[in-house]
Image 1 (cartoon, one colour):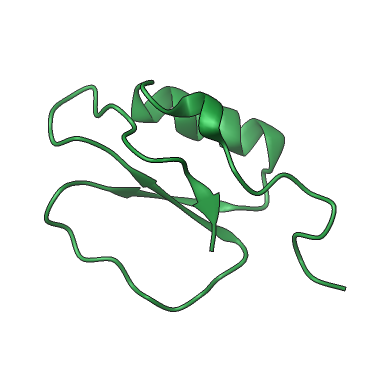
Image 2: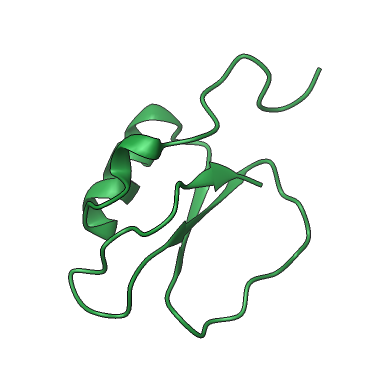
Length: 72
């Protein structure tokens, strides 16, 4: 069985929202995940981790989510 089988793996509803709100929603729905904040210019690892969610934001507070966060 895959770790994410039958579980939510994408959060399109948080695009356009502040990072803090996005992280809170993801953690509420999937508390076992590790949410990683990615700002412009910050390198991202390319390895796959089914328990990690990258949340890509703009560079200014309140750090608005730009892309759909997903597991991987």
